[in-house]
Image 1: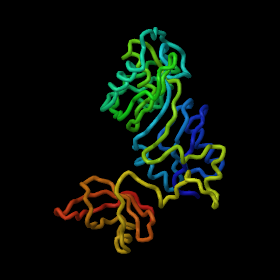
Image 2: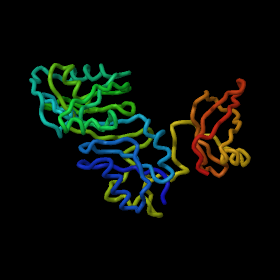
Image 3: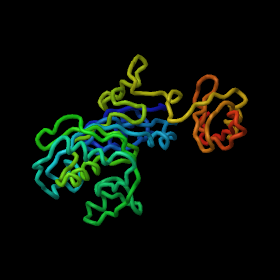
Image 4: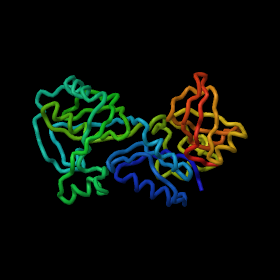
Length: 301
């Protein structure tokens, strides 16, 4: 069984689940998950967790995301993207690049966002898109997200403009595109979307689904597969000695010096051989000299 992360450059026309199923078939392994879905029409980086890596999904899925794409003005759709049925048409007379840029900027910062009606968000165990397809009303499920950058990447070309978006996990680019039209007194929808980054992971290092087997070849220089021990996590790494490693293997706490973290902070725990042995959390701070009590929460060795 393979353990680690696989970076896939998803093509349009397939779901994230389709990609997972195809990778399972190609490498003969069932234990595979993913860190954040992409809509069928969207392309770009899909981060897959393999083997023991699936236990890290909860940490990796929270990473910020970076996208580039295109918004079309003059029409709104029921899905908020180009795959849906047109629900509104409006004039784009007087629309300018500067006006679009100014409206985009109003979305930056902390934001309360309503997911689009056709999405995988669940209510009572039922996905929104299942309710929408049955013609049932979809609840307004407000969620808090953060947008660091939402800005045009070029000039207004006819009725469309390119954009770049840097945002927190869970942000819907489709909803931003839809609401942008309202703020500009017109209609709009997302016409194209590509995910460029998830945290420190880049689509530049990803492999196409058709070439996924090549990522595991011994002679491969591809950076699309990251072995389990080398997985970077969005928190500090600590190295244990042999005695601490034994304690952690039995789920016992260890004292770590020179660790400037607060209670509740996560740590990646490696041993002297740089093997990934556990994910732990600081459960007690002793004094002001950086002594911390670390409790293993997920043990691998």
